[in-house]
Length: 380
Image (cartoon, rainbow, N blue to C red; front, side):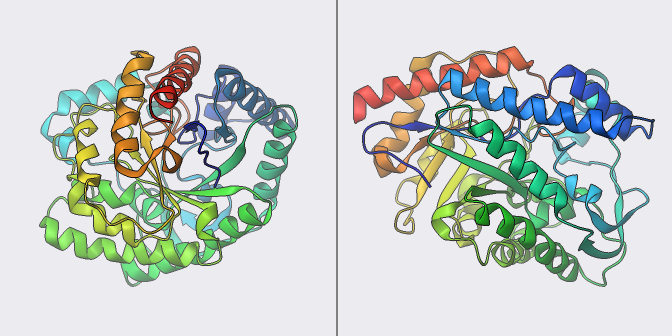
């Protein structure tokens, strides 16, 4: 995992808004309509190339493919056996408490009209990993056209898949997580074998408190999530720690978030995950203050903090000085060489699920890079 003693390097969380032509074709696929598979693959390849180029142009040092070929964090459903029917609906406690906020999301975010989620109805296993090799090849080809420090590819954590896709097959939640971990491990191994950093997207660790576990105490939820941590570590068992990033967040949706669990209450779960870098929100108005939660934390040696200093739900383009101020808080805790500048979450977690247009997203990434330069000049 690349860092620098000369300046704060810049990355982001992963997903980027897909071009409208690709988005519309993915909607046809999601709706069960007829489409040309070769046209879809060509548009994905072009979107990856253009996305990597634009990341480099705005100053991102550590780039990814933008998850252009994936319809969302439940992409595994397209490549694994064992999924069918329909899963439970998304029921976050804050959206239940403020139903008007939920209605606004469902009516104003275009992707909501096309998204359905299956359930787990059979034994989980990959049909093949050809799709993963295609992702890797598309990304590698795009990287040949730019000068950047490093590339990473995201992987949805077993617990996040379980949060999105209800278990209707395995006898226990733990058995479901184990089956998912064993399958996802093949993806992690393929990425690191190709020479790229793996990022595990573990939204489940913070989110389950206000989604599936909202009717139990936080202590009980915490105990249940220990199985999620075990599943993550099982999936990344053969990934070197210095090639592994962990991303956690409370859900990249424009809800009230007033029931989000505090970061300090899940710090032990985060640190129990094998990861050389930890990515987390530190810009949105519910969690920006939690930079203080890292004070006094005994981090494992050579751990890199990857704070989100750009909000990915708001269309405000952050001032570079604000970005620099946020970064300097973390530099003061762990040193500039152990900090990467990043975003709170992705700009396109699910296809069509974004408040931020592509041009604004890249403008925000440019502000991120400019802010990292300001912070570097002040602290390096």
